[in-house]
Image (cartoon, rainbow, N blue to C red; front, side, top):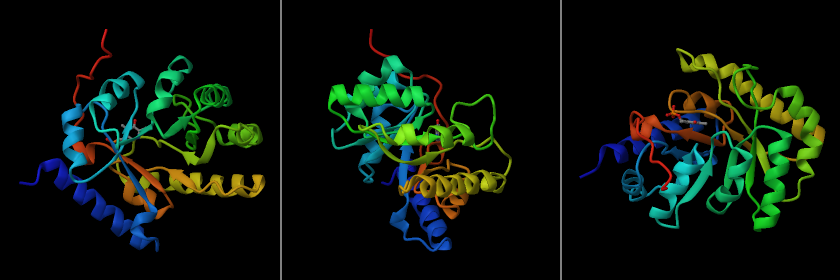
Length: 236
Ligand SMILES: *Cc1c(COP(=O)(O)O)cnc(C)c1O
């Protein structure tokens, strides 16, 4: 019997392939991060049988509670706001951090990655809508800090990430996705580096994000259903 989340995953992959085809890109040009926050390890394990191996979490203590219970073949990406005092514990578990939102955080991440022998993939989180309530570089600050960021030897800076505003219709986020791509193109040209990665698109709007060039989509509720209230706590 095929479980509901396995069925959801299949449907998400179909939507991804269709959006990639509309934008003239191969289906495997876009990576799917299954955002498993609030869902327990057993649910994640079920999805691994699909098979699916790449998961995203937005809280360090939640990731540290679940990841050790699951096969070591799973790949984890961190997508939430990262506090400096949690970097060292997080680093052994993740291959990428999508939410590097300041030069200060990047500098700490680089130093601790060197101490721990890690080379994480990194996306710079940019607040393209310039919503003051959110974390992230502004387009001007990422331009200003790019040279310093690219000089950090332990960070493999793949590109940019954004979380757009909550909107009624996915189409309303198209300008924000297009703005992130244009910013990426400008930064890459100015710095003479490729910056291939665009982490953008969530359950409601990943089709639009893929049409605008997303290389990584972060999809939670369209796969796992509604988020559960109770988040696994860190063991005492
Ligand atoms: C929760 C979360 C997602 C997934 O959101 P859905 O709307 O459930 O797909 C994506 N990105 C970030 C940064 C998140 O925190």
